Image 1 (spheres, rainbow, N blue to C red):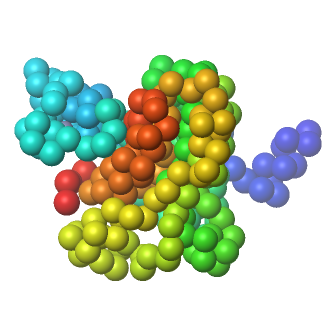
Image 2 (cartoon, rainbow, N blue to C red):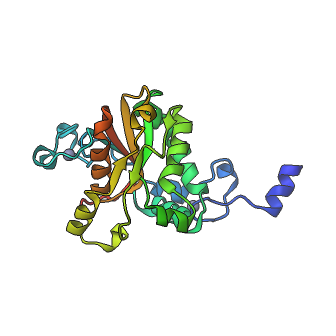
Image 3 (cartoon, protein in one colour):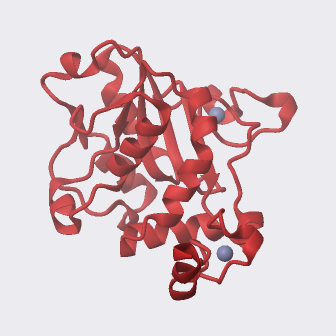
Length: 240
Ligand SMILES: [Zn+2]
Ligand SMILES: [Zn+2]
């Protein structure tokens, strides 16, 4: 009865497109249209940089990694950054609506448990302090908290820090972006204690584009003395 009244007052809608859900979809939170457009990141990839490779060439290394390997030894992404996934991330980052992103993560937990062990440590890509104060949120840290909760491991948002104030990366050219990022990260003084028993540290970000940010963040973590891997919620399909 209560459920019936609730449905009349707050009819269930798709978390992604807000369309009313028909009865069979009631428990899923995602309509059939959106569900079919959600693209998970390809399974056949170069292990090192995470870009898609033909099955016979996986796990690489790809040609790019043979010449210019990134700092991390492994790169993973959960979804391709397009369609409903893109809308979900923008709605979360710009309007604070996290329902669709939480739904995506929830559906990715079984896969995350396969790649993240309980001994691993998740570390968000840090934001400049001024931007964190302005927006009042740290999206990569939220991701770490949710992912660590699902995978049953630790996370620590203070192990890696942002140094100084850099302009928004999106306003810079590729070369200027790399120059800026080279000195953008530093380890906290007590990084050994923060690392604890972890032998793998994952650097986590919401969207991976060129991979520069994650590469330089991973490079800064290397002195911690463990394997450094990177993980993004979503990744754009074209390099560059
Ligand atoms: Zn929908
Ligand atoms: Zn590669």
